Structure formats: C-alpha cells, structure tokens
Length: 256
Image (cartoon, rainbow, N blue to C red; front, side):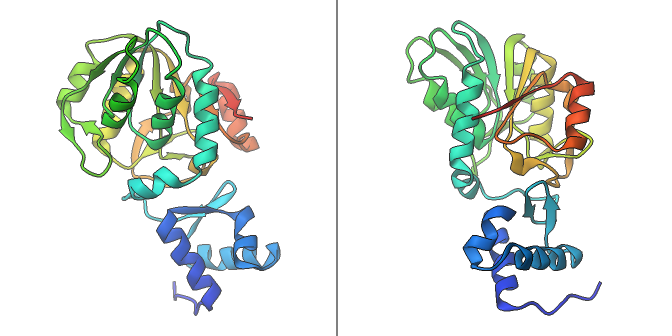
C-alpha cells in the first residue's frame, strides 16, 4: 500500500507510539488538544497504512518481533500495574509456594507481597529475587540460566530444568499480548518455554496483565487462556473475549 502523506500531528502520534510501544485512545485527544473525532480519524488513517495497530482501547506498533524497551515498560501504566499487583496479592495466602516469572507487572506483584509471611518463591526474575529476599521470612530460589541484560530475566534450558523440579501452589505469569480468541502471546521463545513449564508445575495459574495487552501482536504462542485460572487486570475484557473466558472457566479480577 502507498504510504499516505502525514501531517505534523500524525507524525508526532506515530513517534509517540514508537517511543512508548502503545498509547491509549482516550488520552490522545487531550494530549494533542484535538477532538475525539479528529484523533479517531488519525488512527484510522495510520492503521490502514500499517503504521499502527488497533487493540482494545489503544494503539500499538504493528511489529510482532520486538518488545518495547524494559525501561519504557517499567514506567508505562504504573498505577494500573500497582493496582493489579495489590489485587493479586490479596489472593496469595501466607506460607504459600509460588513461581513468579518475568515482566514489570510481576515485579510490582513481588513488591505487593512483601507484607506476607513465610512465602517460598522460585523465580527467574532477578529483580523479583532482590526485592523479595529483603523479607527474612521468605525463602527465595533463583533459577539458573542465561541472564538477559535488558531486564535481568533468566531463561534457557537450565531455567526450565529447575522449574520442573517443583510443584507449587501458585504460578504467577505475565504476557505481552492476548488475542481476541484468548491466545496468549509473547516476544521471546525462551521466555515462553519457561512460562509453559511454570504453568505445567503450578496448582493454580495467575495471570497479571493490564488491558493494553488486549489485541497486541507478538510472535510466540504460549497457549490458550484456558491455561489460566485467574486473570488480574485493570479493565473488564471486551464481550468477545469475555465469552471465551467464560467457556475456559478463567475468572477475571478487575482491580478497583
């Protein structure tokens, strides 16, 4: 398709999404000081040209290969992630055993669990390990493997081998994208393999994922949403996905 000629606002809109990885539609009109109708026309043009991709409540880059930089993800939707983490932590009892894998929301979950007692935590996220080791009542086990410089995540076959030595009460996972049919997607094949092992070796699986993940494109398939017992998010899912969740038996918890 021939690329359209963009005005300055549309160029700035694309640049903003490239910097952040995504943007919520509701805030764009305010940010660019235009009407909702104007911003929606802009987005329709940019999505038709393949420059952006629409998802529930927002837009993202069309790439399915590379995730947004860790430092950017850490600051985006920070309040929503903290609310999700607080709600999830309410469902973890003291003295429980759990896996916690990679992702900025899971790092907030680790912080939200710090008032618990007697948790046994197995993680491939060094940021989670550092946070939770500060509680003297916790036992924290770090999975071995290759450390990713960009986010201190640990992946690889040694990571999977260690996960498979345990069966825990709760597996807490994150995800990069959720398709309308409930398929869970991520960017890193090695990370997906670790998450799959966590799912297989957890009595209950908790997904911590905000609404920006809905419809977001990513390369690697983790599996169907039916693998998840409880999904903790910040916004009720759209009707199509809600029907899928009901059939899968996945409970949805919307953080207040």
